[in-house]
Length: 106
Image 1 (spheres, rainbow, N blue to C red):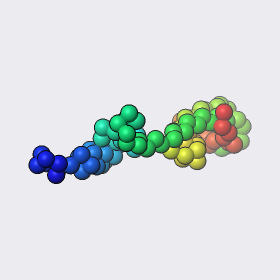
Image 2: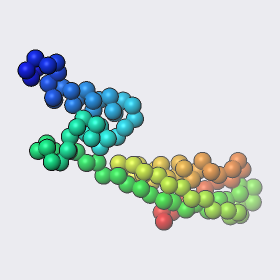
Image 3: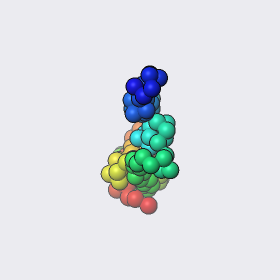
């Protein structure tokens, strides 16, 4: 306890960062919420953010004809997670009786 004022700066920052993560904010937001900044001499952890867009032809299952195209967008901390989220976004737009056919990144 610094000067008898309650929590130390480190404990306070850890509590704020933990709360930010629990409420759905990412590590960068948690670091910013804790009051860390590049100018204060402390190091801020920056997490790479990936964005992937995919294009998927829509295939009708009954006759295997391509009838439409859907697009999906996803973000994530890795390329693989961003692509997985983009594919999920595209698949959520496909109607019943159809399926995605050879999605590709654009």
